[in-house]
Amino acid sequence: MAEEKVATSRLTTETFSVEAVKVLSAAKEEPEWLLARRLEAWRIFEETPMPTLRDEEWRRTDIRGLKLNQLRPWSEPHGSLQELSPDIQAILAESIPEAAKIVHNGKGVYSAPRSDKNGGLIFTDLDQAVREYPELVREYFMTSCLPSTYSKFSALHGAFFSEGAVLYVPKGVEVEIPFHSLLWMDTPGQGTFSHTLIILEEGASASFLDEYYSPDLGGQSLHSGVVEIILKPGARLFYMSHQNWGKEVYDISAKRAVLDKDASLVWLGTAFGGELAKANVETLLQGPGSHVEMLGLYFSSGRQFFDHHTLQDHISHHAKSDLLYKGVLTGKSRSVYSGLIRVHPQAQKTDAYQANRNLILSGKARADSIPNLEIMANDVRCTHGATVGQMDEEQLFYLMSRGLPREVAVKLVIDGFLAPVLDRVPWEKIKSRIAALIDAKMPLGLGNGAQSQNSAAG
Image (cartoon, rainbow, N blue to C red; front, side, top):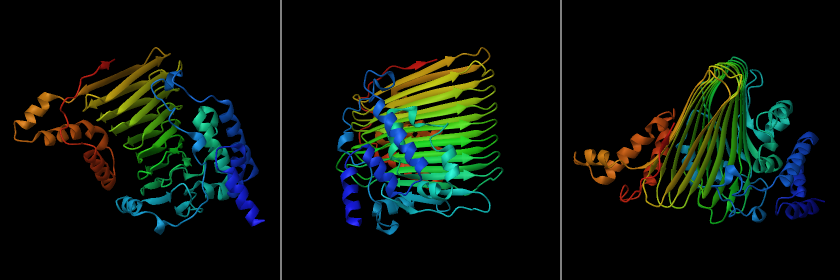
C-alpha cells in the first residue's frame, strides 16, 4: 500500500490539477472543510481567464514567459535546518537575533516556535495552525480579507498553498520581540505558495518581518504568495516584506490589510530579485480614525521587471493614508507603478497622500508611473504625484567639486534618494543587508548616459 501511495503521489503532482490538489491535502492530513476550500479555489482558478496584455491591470506586464504547465505544484517535505545551504545560513546569521523565527523552503518547516497557549499568543507555521487552531484558520484564512476570488493567481494559491506563518496577538498584548518568517526557495521548476496570516486583536501591537530568498536556480520557478493582515480596533503593527529572488523566478503576490477603528499599520516592502515580480498591496481603512503608512523600495537591473499596484481604500471617515514608493533602475530593466486612492461616499475627512519617485540610471531603463484618484466624498484632502527622471548632474557636480570620484558621488545621491524609506527599517542588521544589496546593484560608471523621462504631479 505504501508503494502504491508514493506512485500515485508522483503521478498526480507533476502538474497543476484537481488530482494534485487532493493529493496535497491528503499528504497534509487536512480536515474536510479545508480540502473543500482548496477544491473551490481550484474551480475558481479554472473558470478565471489567465490575465493578458488586454487587461488594464496587466497591459504593461507580460507573463507569457511563465510556463505553469512545466512547474511542479509542490514537493514532499524533507531535510532539516542544518542541511540548508550556506547562503541561507548566512542570511539567518545576519538576521534579527532576538526574533521568534519560522524558516521554510517550499518543502517543509525547519524551525517553528511554540505558541503561548496560556496567554493566547500564537506564532506558528500554517500546517500546525490548521492542526491546533482550526477555528482561527477557518475564520480568517482567505475569507473576508483576501478570498480566492481576488484573482487568477490568488485562486491558484488557494488551491495549492503549501506553507506559511500565522501570528495571532490577543487583546491588549504588546509584543516587543519581533516575529520573523523566512522563505528559502532552492529548487528550479517548482511552484511555491507561501501564506502569511496576521491577526491583532483590540489594542494589541507587534512587528513582523517577511523575507523571501533564493539563489540563481538555473530554471524557471514561481512564487505566488498571499499576505492577510487583520487589525482590530486600536491595534498597531509594523510589517515589512523583503525579497531578493534569484534569476528566472516569477513572483506574483497579493497582500491586503484590513484596519478597524483607530488601528495603525506601517507597511514597508522592498524588491531586489527575480525575473518578474508583481505585487498588489492594498489597505482597506474600514474603521474611523484608522491610519496606514505604505512604503516601498525597489532596485532593478539587467532585464528585471517590477510591477507594483497599490490601493488606499478609504471606506470610513477620519482615516489617513500616506504612501511613498521609491525605485532605482539600471540596465534594461523596467518598473510599473500604479496606485489608487479610493474615497467612498461616507469617508468624509479623509486625508490621503500618494507619491512614486523613480531614478533612472540608464538610457535603456524605463519606469511607468500611474497615480490615480477616485473620490466620492466632498470633504477630503487627497494628493498624489509621480516623478521619473535621471540623475541630477548639478548634485553630482557639487559633490565631485569637493573631490569625490563620480562613482562615489552617484552612490551618495542614490543613498540620499532611498534614505526616506530605508531609514524606516527598525532592525540594523536588516538595514545593513539591504544597503549591501543596493551597493551590489550599482555597476561602475553609473550616471553616464541616463535619459530623462516624463514626470507628473498632481
